[in-house]
Image (tube, rainbow, N blue to C red):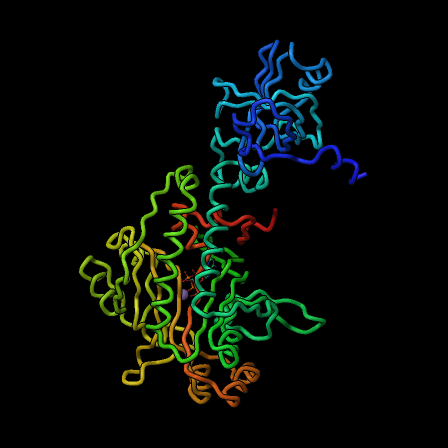
Length: 440
Ligand code: ATP
Ligand code: MN
């Protein structure tokens, strides 16, 4: 059945490959009916596939009665196969149209649709997410996910070229890697397990084997706060490198960002236009501000943060206003604000080798040099109220030969906000998960 269907209905061209040079040629195109016009004696269908659109023109005089009558039953988003002849026509979009000899309906759509998928009528984000698959057919969404694809390709290419090896660690873990608060617990054959918050400890362990590793993966945090930059599930780009300092991996981070942006500017011109997004290649190196400098800057602008505390959202917003369209690092954080695996500085243990990469007011990446002695690791765990026994599996690795190492974790979805000029993280994730959304 399947075989015989595709014997007849094998696509010969994507819609974007139909040019006036093909005038007179027989083709088969497949896709979704996006628009219609019925002028009585002539009907038009705009057929859209994953690569573009082409006009199907159905003049009563030139097609069979069957085709002409069947066309009247076609509605928006029906899935069609169209066999016909290409005709150059100056009046058609892109100067070309197809006159069908046969139209096959592969799939129907029920009307009214919950969403207008051509993007002409704006809809609320929740309406859109409820009908996400239709929403994704809008040109804006398709542009965003095209950019996302290109960015991921570019990230993999860059990191591989720099000698990082791609790894895949487990998503089911027995102990928190980022402190205990935001874990999703899981029943594991009657015992307790959690969804991984990050690949942190595993990637640190793997540098004792492969030295330079990276992972691109889904991670989970039970974020109670409902914001435009947090989801319960997000994609993290993680790297870890042996015999490297925080500054070394910051260089990897800024070079990576510059390369990805350059790639997007080159390869996604059309998509950036659709999104009305003016990306520009950032200047290197990015500015590096210390945490203390940041506090001074904020204080001068009327926002007091006590040394040792994290930046509030209000403070980050203010900082963002001072750093428009800019990536910058904040370094030298107080040790107490950072997770247990971050290494305190030898000459002043109150501050540590941690950094955040910011874009305007949004944190894109956190990273740093890691604790590389077992005793210090135990001390840091205790300081943060964690039980070293739960980290037995990881403490052992320090007995097998642990090199000094550094790394970072970058929120891919947050980076996508920059690459597509969007403000809500839900726009750049196919099926976002938050406290109030588990479906679709
Ligand atoms: P924030 O302070 O913004 O909540 P964080 O400091 O808790 O983030 P990290 O543990 O540093 O997050 O994780 C590294 C990166 O992963 C972050 O800089 C961010 O880009 C991304 N990230 C973390 N949590 C989320 C989330 N819930 N949704 C989307 N991205 C996230
Ligand atoms: Mn962070």
